[in-house]
Amino acid sequence: LVHRLRRCSDCVLVGRTTVERDNCTLTVRRVPLLPEHLEQPTRVVVDPNLHLLKSPSDHALLNDGLQTILYHSLQRQEEESFLPLGDTVSLVNTMMDDDHSTTTRTRYIPMSPVVQDLQTRGIHHIMVEGGPVTALGFLADGLVDRAIIIQAPLTFKEPVASNISESVLSKAGLALMGSYVNDGGDTVQIWSRPNLPWPTDNLTNWP
Image (cartoon, rainbow, N blue to C red):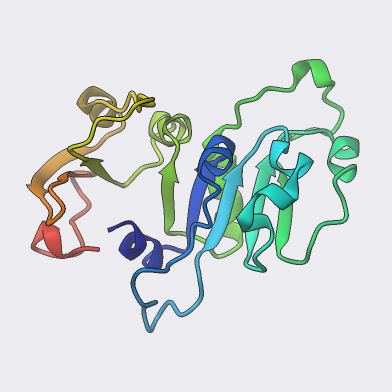
């Protein structure tokens, strides 16, 4: 399901912690690319202080030659300390004013400016894959059109709570369209904006 979702998306977006924890590539691998989407989706990482660039060789998505965008909130001179980068890694500063002092810098980046910048790059279908803090940021800003919630029948030794409840989804303007159990035994919930139909009549047929 994750790889089918990726191949339908213009980009796959995660927070820094997801990259550090999983060393993910965020590429489409287990299913073929679609004829109308023959390129891998752009990888997007929200990394306010550019922690990933302190040890770039540790992270696969910074070294595989595919397009990656890092959104941060450092001052210009701090950003320049990480340059030059490879041709496939881009830095985008979300600060509106380069004169902000380091004392006003925040670890949190609002998601709306990220979405607006991606749209200027022709990136409109954004798959927010994780982690929970990043997903909650999109929900809080009212930027989510559809949500697929997957609950696996597993118990983790060190679980990370998502804090994405039905109440949070409802407050974000989403409504539960239905649910099903997939072939792997996972419970899948389908949420969407009430005025936005699911791409297929049968919820299980998309992606």
